[in-house]
Every structure is written in C-alpha cells, then in structure tokens.
Amino acid sequence: MIHPDDWPLVETGVADALVKGEGFDLDVRLLDHDGQVRWTHTQAEVECNAEGKPLHVRGAVADISQQKAAQETIEQLAYFDPLTKLPNRRLLFDRVRQAVAAAKRSGGCGALLFIDLDHFKRINDSLGHRAGDQILIEVAARLRAQIREEDTIARLGGDEFVVVLHAVANPGAIRRAAYRVLERLSGNYAIAGHPYHLSASVGVALFPADGDDTTELLHRADAAMYQAKKEGRSTVSFYQPALQNAADERLAIERGLRAALIDDQLELHYQPKVLDGSRIVGAEALLRWHHPERGLIAPGDFICVAEETGLIVEIGAWVLDAACRQLAVWNRDRPPEQQLVMAVNVSPVQFRNPDFVACVERAINAHRLEPPLLTLEITEGILIDKVEETVARLAELKALGINLSIDDFGTGYSSLNYLKRLPLDEIKIDRSFVANLIEDPNNAAIVKTMVAIATTFSLHLVAEGVETTAEAEFLHALGCHCHQGYLYARPLPAEDFTRRYCQETP
Image (spheres, rainbow, N blue to C red):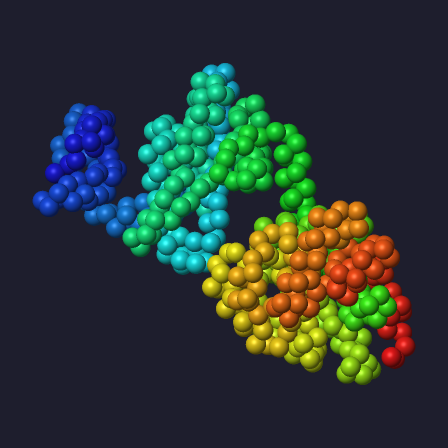
C-alpha cells in the first residue's frame, strides 16, 4: 500500500495529470506486507478521447528501493559524521550561515561553542582507539540530551565538537548554556566497565557580534577554546579580539615550522659543559630557528606550537640526527679519554612517540657514535604520567647504551621513589636555584640537598645558569663540579664552538 505520508502528493500529482490529460512521473514510498518501506518509480501516459477526456493510463512501475538507499547513504556520508551520526563540517557551515542570517533578520544573537575534550589523546594511547570511539559516541549522546532541538551539534573531527545556539535571548543565556554543556560533558565515562574521568574546554564566539562569516566565527571560537586550555582546562572562555591575534600568531608559527623543516631554516647552537671551571667535557644542543623574515627565533616561542601540532616529532628527529652528526665530527680526531659528550633535550610528546627509541638508535648508528657519548635530557613531568610505560621506555633507551638525565631537577615532581626506579645517569640543577645562590640560604640548602641525592644514587650532577665566578666557586664548594652558563659561554653556532674548543687536536 502507499504510505499515508505520501498519499497527498501521489493523489494530487495523479489527479492533476488526469485532468490535464498528461502523463505523470512520480517516486512513491510504499509499505510492503512485512511493513518494510520500499520505493517505486512510476512513469505513465494518459490516453484521451477526442474530447480530451482520459480513457486509460499506460505506463511502468519500477522498484527503486536500492537506488534510494544508495542515495541516502551518499547523503549521510556527505553531510554526517559516520561515527557519531552528527552533522559534519560541511553541513555545519550551512547551519551556521542560516543561523547568522536569522539572527541578523531578527536582531537577535546566537553563538558557536567550540568544544575540545581535555587530554583525549591519553585515552587513545592507553586504552586504544575503540575506547576512544566509545567516548566520542557518548559525548555526542550527552550533547544531544543537553541542547535544544532547534540547535545544531556537529563533529569537526577527532575530539572537536561544535554547538550552534540559534536565537538565544541574550549573552547571559549563552553563558549559562555553555556552562551547562561543560558540566554535562565533565565526569565519568564507562569504558569496559570501568569509570574514566573526562573534562572539556569550551570556547565561545557570538554572532553577529564577533562576526558573520562562518570560517571567521569558527576561528574565533577555536581561539577562545585554546584560551580555556591555557586557563587550566575544564572551563569556558569567550572570544576577545586579543585572542585572535594569538591564534593568528600560532597559525603563522605552525605554517612557518612546516616550511622551516623543508627549507633548512633550523639549526643547533651548542653550550659547553665545563668540569672544574676549565675543562670542556661536552655540549648541550639547543634548537634555533632562522626565520627568513623575523630572524633568529628562540625555542620558547615555537616549541609549544610544535608540540600541540605534533611537529615536534619530526623536529626532534632532525635535532637528534644533527647533534649526533656534529658530535661525530668533533670527536673524529680526539683520543678516547677526551671524547666530548652531547646532551639533547627530549619533548614529552617526542618521548611518547612509538618510534622514538628506534629514532635514537638510527641517529647513533648513522653517525657511528659510541652510545655513552649521547645524553638525552627529559623533564620531570614525563615521570609522573604513565609511570610503568615510562620506566619501560627509559629501560629501552638505556639498553642502547646512552645516558639519561633529568633536566631542571627540583622544579616539577621530584621524588626519591622515581630516582630509585629509573635508570638515570644525571640530574641537572635548574638555573632558578643557582640564581641568588650566595644571597639566598634556601637556594643554597636546596643545592646542597641535590648534591647529597646525586651522591646517594651515584648520579652525575650538572648546574645550569652559572653566570658568575662566585656562583661557580660556591657550587664547587658544595660538591657540584660540572657547570653550564654564561660565565663560560653562551650557546654558540657549530662553527664558533668548533673554532673555540675543537680547532686543535687535544
């Protein structure tokens, strides 16, 4: 039988055709005897008598159910996210344009809520992508339960969602709605029968106040979301014009870094490690970026972006290779007892990369280095996250024969329990403790404790940021004999370091 919803269309179309003595061409939705929906396509011609009255109808009916299903599938793939069944970016853009146009006509307002789950990558890394997909499906369900029927929820990709609030009474109502979304998404999610706590960061852009272009509004809501991340996550941040400048700068840095890797704009500077105030025993490789327009850019201005985008993995591999290559050159003619060592900083993102151990091994083998001549410096923050995995990764690195150092020791999450479990060779005293070492008895007490810790665990000790002879002598008296700092040299390009310390064969 013909589905009731379709009868008015069929009835009208056929009746009009019969009255006019014309044919008709209709798609009709039917219910078969099992109650299943089927589609037919009917083409017919009307044969009339001399007075123009219909005599009979001649035509054909074809089952087009498969074609209709294929068409629906294509539309679903084109406009909806296959995992969460939410609108995708393409449909989102259309909905935003409609919402902005309606707000302009009515003089009202609306908002874009840009939502990013906090630390979602940890779920994929630790529990697997299937668990991550379960979380995303649950997030979509929670958003559907929270948002009004007339509003739009979309998934941009990954763990990023956008909510379009249509025709909201005032900005205060938008703020309340944003915090309700945040509260709804924060809490425990069940994965394989176990609770997993999750939170979100929300950035808000208002329309038309913050703009009327869809792409512009998304960028501004995204910038506000990054501000929420900086404010500690699990919060809501509203767009401010200054945020867009920061977002534009971040995007420019990301694009510039991609070009820097291709165009050979990165280089290493080297700061010497000095033993007993005079003997050069090695160097720390420090990354610099020679931007074609902005000149020399220090790591503090681009490393965070490199980590957020994942570019740090490729950059870190380049640093390892370049540092090992340079060390091989310096040590080529040096006797074994006077070989220099090279320290290379490792980002937490780089450390967690599955290919990291293999990357280190490739760099060592490519330049035929003796592994103990390479020291990897890790931060204390690495030690508290996924402890068992961290211990296993450090053991793999240690099995290569390299040395491992904790950088900026004492500024993060120092624990004697970590020190006794990890295969470490060195700890570095942060420059913040070296500064005012002589004037501040607290700093002196901290350094003295670090010397005792290093002695207890048989660890090498290096002090960073040594700038005066008095500081060097004080450190030496406390038992710390290896230093880095401006007292000895600023970080130097390879040519200058070579000329100053490696020009003549020892």
